[in-house]
Amino acid sequence: MLIHNLKPQPGEALTYQPQMTNGTAGFDYALVTVSPGTLSGRRMMTIGGSHTWGTEGAVEYITDGPSLRDLSEKIGNAYGRKAHIQILLKVEVKDSQVVSTDYVTHHWLN
Image (cartoon, rainbow, N blue to C red):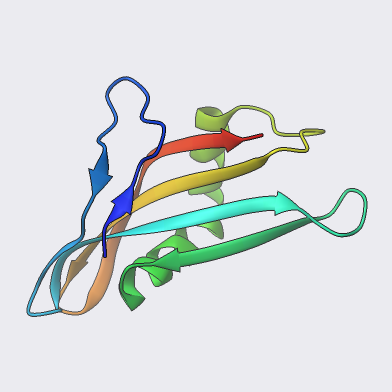
């Protein structure tokens, strides 16, 4: 699976492609999308990786306090914003286990 960056910013790639060796090692990408919910003040989140490990790494990242603080610094204060945001994460895998997840980029979608 290839992730296409439709509006690349300076320093961003046009595409992001996972590279897994025998499905047990390498890196995957995950996309986290946060959208306004159906009720005022609520949001919906969609999480998906190219492989299971990408999804697992993204879930670990967005539920980890230090990772969330780091992410908040990168994306800024989203309080009151009604736009959608997509966050791209890179997930490193060794021996069929997630070993790290790193922020790659984010885009606000208006």
